[in-house]
Image (cartoon, rainbow, N blue to C red; front, top):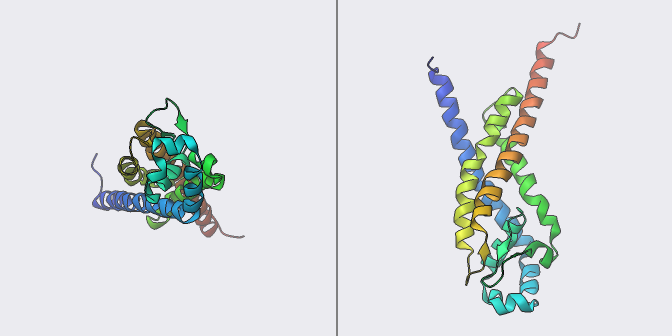
Amino acid sequence: MSQSPHTESSGTATMVYGVIIGVSVYVVGYLLTYATAASAVNRAVRGNVRLADAGAAFAPAWKAVGWVFYDAHLVGTRLPDASGHVDFVGLSGVQFLYLVPPLLLLVAGGTVAYLTGVDNPKAGVQAGLTIAIGYLLFAIIGAILVSFVGIQPDLLRAAVVAGIVYPVAFGAIGGGLVGVLRADRRTLTETPLW
């Protein structure tokens, strides 16, 4: 059974939208984190003896904000001499950032579904899932880039939790919601009022 050219081109368009929006929402999430948390992170890092001893006080602000951004995805940041993870979100007092990745990913999944014109929940979920491709790529690259003197987000958790679980779950929900709304709207326009 072969697919029609229209179906293949629409699948390609969905994938392209998904990758572009996945990358974009990662960047927007990081920039939003930077704009709202940079000074709090700086104070927390400089005021914590354990972090100062590990060298975190000398980290560029964009790297320290990266640690917070990953912690907002529930990915811990490791210190070079510690077996556990540091919760930079809690340490910096910016717990509202836990809401940023889910909300942005919901909107991203819904945007892909909207742009590709889905008209049912299943197609919406499938469209929303595509954001994970671009998001995963940047989640891995970003976790490597924010490493500083052995302080870095857990790479495996960055890939699995931040790069796959978050965008798959929230992207699918956002896309599915758009599919539901469009299916309801289509049903209302096709059903005669009397």
